Length: 112
Length: 112
Image (cartoon, rainbow over all chains, first blue to last red; front, side, top):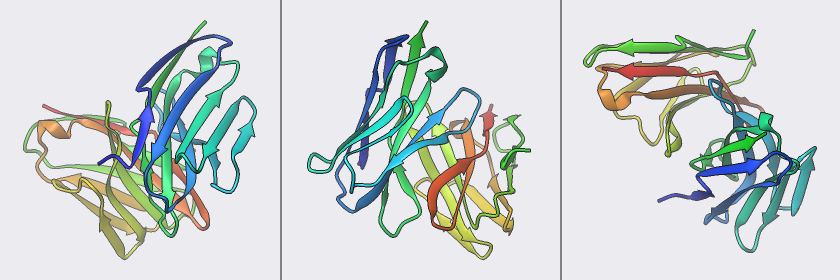
């Protein structure tokens, strides 16, 4: 049973466009929602994270939107660039646990 | 130098062979983890350790074992490698009140 469902599996966007990756969860005990970015040949790296007491967090061109009632959160990449081409993982962590549950990842390709 | 170093970066081994993947970190973190990445399946937890004397199984521990030799070192062993253990393997750390992970660059293992 997938506790964190991530979609789409792959995404192709033109340079300058908006990339949107969605995640949904069931466990209401989750209280920390990070996103990781993985470039080819590298390990995932923490990109941005949000807690459920806020509905949005923005860092540069990257924004997490969080909908607690719908149990959904999403990553928006504004003005997408070819250098943003990577695999993105959402995750959710239950309060009291150090171990997140990961989504299955989204492969993003940004065409020049 | 990288915060989390994994060796080897690439390895091809034969079915039935014993192989060890090594991980060392300079973050000073107590918590260390081994993950496996397969296309379309995301990151799956193999084993984790919260301190030198603590070892815990993850969701896919069968066929694997680990050793926490020191706070900074956590190794993963495949006692008798089989082809379906062909995958990317990542070591990760986390520490203190920071719930984000720091990943190594991974080991690409091929079992033939």
